[in-house]
Image: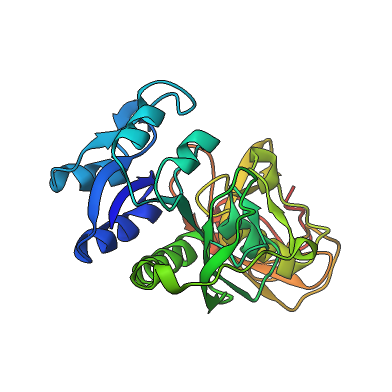
Length: 301
């Protein structure tokens, strides 16, 4: 098939590679513009663009998607289909209608659960036992199109956003190529409005720990927000980041240090494993507690 591929982050790379390996004619790769990142604000090129350039593919990184060269190019290329994987921009009806068979989107959840910008993070935050990837026919409404295919995976209690993203990305690439192989024979399935949940954009304050919540909930918060925005709590006028922990038995006033590295929560306790103070590297919770001279009964606030 003659395709356009719209995707920006690392998550989208296996899908683009799979389309190329399957012999599809990828006429255009579209990603968001280069963005400054890191302390030096060095411009970083999206990994999908880097891969496209290795294969000599035509690329675009439009600032505007509603007018100008981008929608015109999508029409001129006479595409069979456009494949969208974590592109990060809302497409107009003009773009959705440009390819012969429209646009499909690979979404990292089991639609209609977790429509929106951060489905992987919210599936962990909510304590879901299962997630997956869905391929939907795109419509103007957010992630509301009919589903063409899906595949599922359990969410393990050791999964964080990184490990789950990597697994879903690999699963998604396989599902995408299988879907295109039998595209003409698939029967789209409409989404059940009663099952819709929204994976809203995450905010920095989502990472603030409330020790009154259960240890299981805080564990999901730490794993679900790993990377950005991370989880943190105030500590002696600073911000303490909690990088890794696990729920254990324990009782006490929420936020109170128990024996070892356990901190009491609203229900059970959390054994801290890896933490980080500002302008320092990650350290073990034991080294942190010893360095701060904390004792059982002290509050971690």
